[in-house]
Amino acid sequence: MCPSKRPVSAVLKPPEVDIAVIGGGLIGSLFSLAAAKSGFTVGLIDAVTGYGDRSAFDGRAYALSQASCRMLAALGFRELLHRRSQEIEAIQITDGRAGEGAGPFKLRLESAECGIGPMGRMIEDRFLRGALTEAVAGCTGIRLLSTEVRAVAFENGHARPEINGGLSCSLVAGCDGRNSVVAASAGIRYSVREYSQSAIVCAVEHGQPHAATAHQFFMPNGPLAILPLQGNISSLVWTTTHAEARHLSELDSDGFLAELRPRFGSFLGELGLVGSRARFPLSLTRAESFTATRAALLGEAATALHPLAGQGLNLGFRDAASLTETLTAARRRGEDIGEPAVLERYQSWRRLDATLFAGATDGFNRLFSSDNPLLRTTRGLGMAAVDHLPHLRRRLIREAAGLTGTLPSLLVGPPV
Image 1: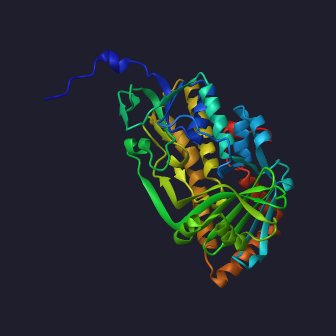
Image 2: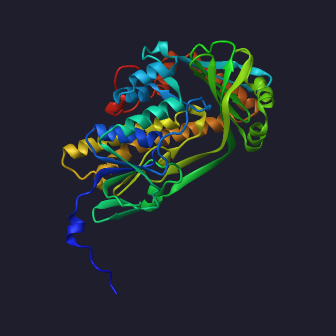
Image 3: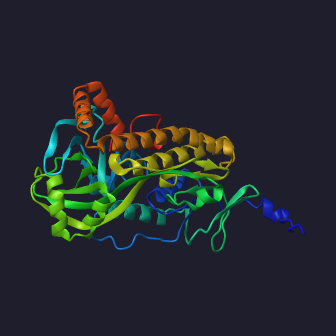
């Protein structure tokens, strides 16, 4: 027996919002604000609303490229960046072993060489997430829905997130991470490369100033990133084997610092832990497509990188800015924003960039996570060579600042 047909009035009923954003994290909130400020009506759906008690620093922080900072400034967060973030004026890359210090070769990148302002800024999670949450709550173009999305149905020219109360939209934006409900509902598959590594994330205070310099120290088990925060505090991302990461996470503060000091070195003086520690396994996860009819993926729902370059969140910013610009241009032409031809423009814009970043971080991790003496010498000589080639060095500085490639307008503006 055939199911009864849907009434014509229901088929022709316009969507309740232009865009339903699934996932209210950093990228979901950011894209919702960008889309709403561009004139779209947005339904932001997440089972968790607000951001909890963030009165104290919990150890989480983010490296924002100069381009990402420009986007935040364009959306009204310039004062937040100046009050709450730490500029990154230099990046120093070295190779070595725990207890032996850095090897004889290094690569140092300084933003002053390009005259672009700082390469980026570090900001604590509580400040960035809190500011985005407050801005979303105060934006009249965004409808907040605190509920779980079970699936998304695509029918009759609309997308319909399956939530309590129901909702229809012209486009659903998946900002819901690696296990995206949007991707699963749209039939988008993932390629996953598991690394035999986990990351420990925390922050330390130190006796000497960091001079606005980020350090990337490559060791055989994985890199240690030391990223400057406001004051004499640095954020750490310590990548190592699963077994060592598990051991480190089980130590008390004194035990952890005893293991950290031989890797960190003494160049910043005495160390003390600030906030808590977190551990998570690492993988490279890429969606086989960024789009389907009436669906687009952003952030880690599209590409989740190894953290060694600190570019994962910045890729999400580029996704949000590119999709906003693509949809705005389509609306001006009178196009349906959920149609494949429109969304293919977003995918074409973002896919190559994300693939290049994924390949670069994966390659660097493989190259530097080796203790082969010949390979160590070769990569050391390579770093030294780049350090003495101004043209290539300046190119890397602009890459780190996120200022290469064809940028959407939200990422273009004066230095922040």
